[in-house]
Image (cartoon, rainbow, N blue to C red; front, side, top):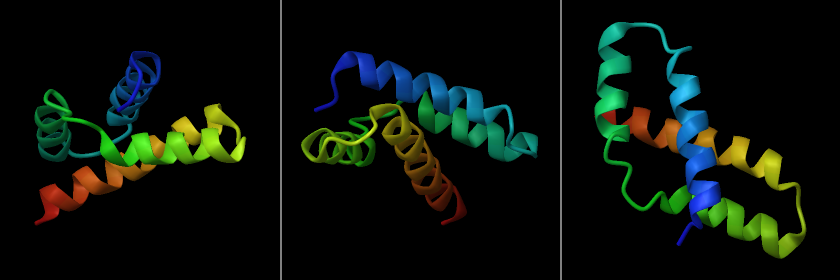
Length: 78
């Protein structure tokens, strides 16, 4: 669903954001989950909508990363 360029951008940005997460346990759990990122459906939806609406793709990548991290943290919390 995501083309490889945007998938790589999202995964790179997520890995950069991991450096800002406090607590080694949370960081290790996120790294484990992100080693198998799956389809990245949420970011794909945001980027596709941005494309359809003619939005700023660079900003959409940032929003996609934020949404994916929020989703992953909710999985860890549960």
